[in-house]
Image 1 (cartoon, rainbow, N blue to C red):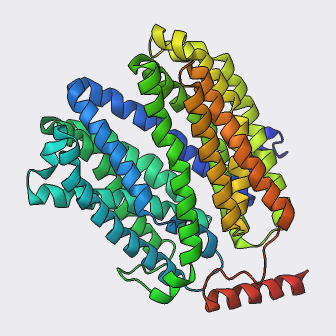
Image 2 (image 1 turned 30 degrees about the vertical axis):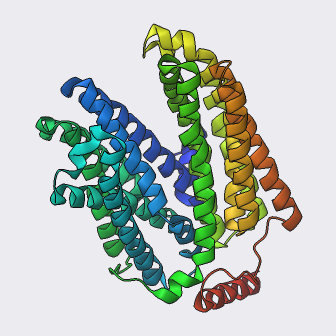
Length: 448
């Protein structure tokens, strides 16, 4: 029988043999499933709960998302960078999970105590000690779920991201609003965060049983210290990345009003479908570069071509369908946000460029350059958005593109100065990790 030929069998073959393509595919599939289930979740919630309760719950969930990022301490990046080559996987994973568990619980409890003082509408959070504990534990679980994703990415097991976050968490999340319908805003909050907690627990079980890493509730101080500088550098970078996401929606609301703010929110969410592509491929690039089994310059070229192959048609489709897609949300959205969505879609090329170069800085451990790049991104994006906020949403959308382009240029300049290579003398990791990497490097040279 003649073997099938064509683009589909060729892609299937690459999906099986190429870890960069395979990890990228599963991460993009996870994003697509998560976005689809989120869309269904909010439709279900909107039909079961009053608008006011939906509003309070969305504020709570946004806060928990931010708390989860702040609780991460940059350890997700350290896991992707060091797990592929370390012989001490148990120490790295256990230390990261335990540290994030403590930080997430403390930050969650602090938020539950302070939030009602800032916003009286959230006074139900401080109704009792058990409620504060429950909120803190769920906030911690969301942070743990983000961290376990990095373990799967690092070890070329992103299929578990899809199965656990894309399928399991989505099914639980969509079903729970019916269970908690009598609990009001807290019921919506529980539906989303309990789903994350279920995925987090399942992830830890898979890490122990499928990846054979015996996770323990313990911190290994030597391991944690050995990656502290890298973790904190990535943590600072992540915080800078959050600044535009926090500030620009407030600028739009204050300067252009709630209608424009709604249009901007919808357009940005649609554009994020395109932006998810370079991020997924960038994460796969980060993991493959950390395995140190392929020349980094060649890996960078392959990942760039893969990004372009998907982003170009995705941008074209988004621009062509901008008006009809926005019309699904209402005619006012199509009128007010169409041009904004078009500019955001075209800006995806700048976002892809910045994402790709930023992940290369992570692989090569150029922390000062990475922080400078993200500082440029935050300052340029927010600065231009503030200047253009009085005019229209198009100016706001353009600020994203220009900010990402400027940040990407800084990153590429840093890469050009050092080159697309890993430094054998890099201080990252413990003595055991460095010795293990040197043995791997010698082995590769003998094999060559």
